[in-house]
Amino acid sequence: MSIQHIDHITYVAAAADENNFIERWGLLGFKEYVRVHTPRYPAAHIALASGDDPNFPWAMMTGLSVSDDPKSPINLFVQRYGAGPQHVAYNIGPGEDMEELHRKLVARGWRFMTEVLTYRDSTGAGIRQMFVAPQVPYGPFSELVQRIHGPSGQPFDGFDTTNIDNLYEAYSDYSAHLENRKSTPLWAGTATPPGNRMLTLE
Image 1 (cartoon, rainbow, N blue to C red):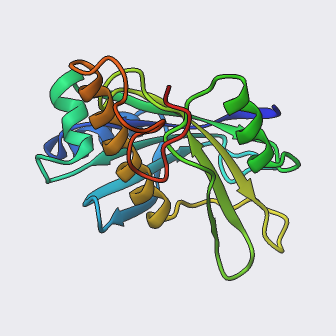
Image 2 (cartoon, rainbow, N blue to C red):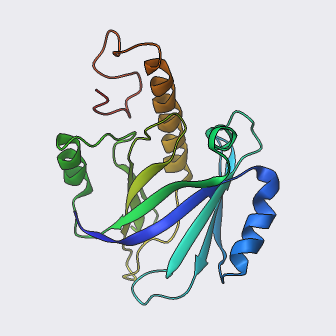
Image 3 (tube, rainbow, N blue to C red):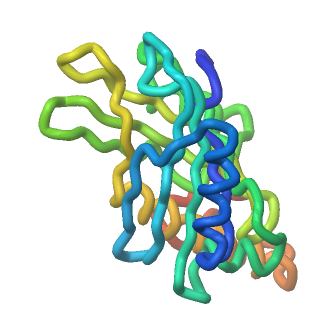
């Protein structure tokens, strides 16, 4: 596996803390780079970037996800564990076959919430992402991300709302599975819990 560097670290917090978060990171030189809003799991996802890199859109990125929905997976994380880092995303080199990497890691015992989620924009640039399952319901997790280069030779520098919503669907389903395991030692009746994004849970 060819990990290039940490792509980003995303935090979650109460929606009321959004401005304070941005101001605090602003003191360290981070500025808002992109903001997207997801429709199915309503939330704002804000990327803050700092520094320059000749081979990448930014030198460092941190993110914040907030939601006004008290039942959002974001707020369920905050209610259980407090505001803080939700996931770390590791950047995978552009020459890596993400589908093959996913298969190899599953064979080695890694547990993923998702398959490889892919988005491409009109220029052909895009993003591939896969998300490692949390150990506890609505807990922290890891991401493997590959940024697809466009015609300019620069990697895709944004995020896709469909991928994010698909992540949160899988995150909710997997967390429900972990909750059920507290009372059910084995998954009853099927090798995997419901949801086509669940992989090798047992």
